[in-house]
Length: 265
Image (cartoon, rainbow, N blue to C red; front, side, top):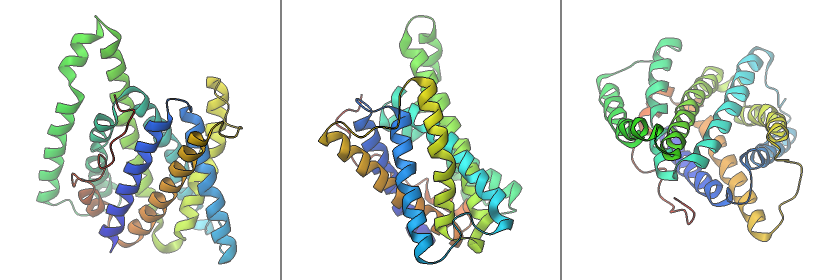
């Protein structure tokens, strides 16, 4: 059941990524991340109020939930900028380093098993990452054009997102069933929304505004809905299954290029 939830969450993340890429032509990365976090936070508050749950979680889990929120902000920031610098297919392929990092960190910090087929999957994913990143092209173009620099920045953002996501997954897994999945969703929103507002102010891209057209409303609502579904299912799946096993399921080549993006480079 946990694996099925994780795979469904992956499809939802893919749909969210496609929507963000589609909307990034007119909406800033901080704005899209802010509205996504805001929608998730409102849902979590309503859910917790309905079932009389403290949205901050139990005292013994709050520090870890805070880590989940902070790494969620860092991962969201990295990923949205990745989509700015790379085509969606390349960006999502590079995030396959996330499962590799998750498997290693889960083994070290949570004591989860690291079997031979995990190593095989990690090796296969690593080869794919090297081919997608195109390091020779990056190095060759760095001195001659902006293309190499753009690709290098996008690759670094994607790898940063993978590390932050792995830390976030481990935080959720370590909390386990001590807190509701809604507490994890709320923790993400609690840190991401205000930090994205600050980031938007620094970058000169305000987040406190309504969408300016029907298309932008569709982008905001779809991205927020897909993100809410994905994060909710992710939290539920990590309560059921070890992080390393879910990382292996995330290596299945199905999840992130299902929906073609009309604005893909």
